[in-house]
Length: 176
Image (tube, rainbow, N blue to C red; front, top):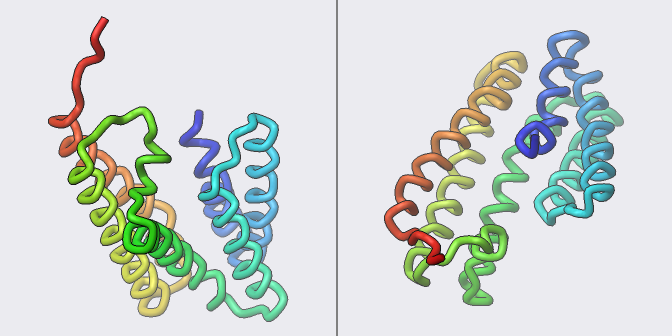
């Protein structure tokens, strides 16, 4: 259920794009993101990630609709991925914190593993930003939307599963 709630705006963006094009899809994504925040607020678990996503979609989606220029919505994922990478990198470099440890507070890992995990996610977000930029500005809008939705979800799932495999060797069974 959490997966569906997290990807609710993206899925509606995709459906709206196929149905009515980029302008309607952008408006739908903005409204869906606001509804997503309202839902998470009601459930009492609005994360910083969701707030950042909302701000970025409102700013870039709003610019797309006001200026009638799809360039802005195409920049949105690249900017969002770079913001996530920057937050993780600044957390590590400036504050010596592995912010993923706060997100995954149920995991107990050695500090060196948290550091590797943090830097692997920074690299992944930078790679996703570069991939989005490349597809957005070298392919058609329809190809970009398909990549953004299915390629993005697929790459995140593959990366998260790979991280899970790596982390599994550090996890211990709870004592009873």
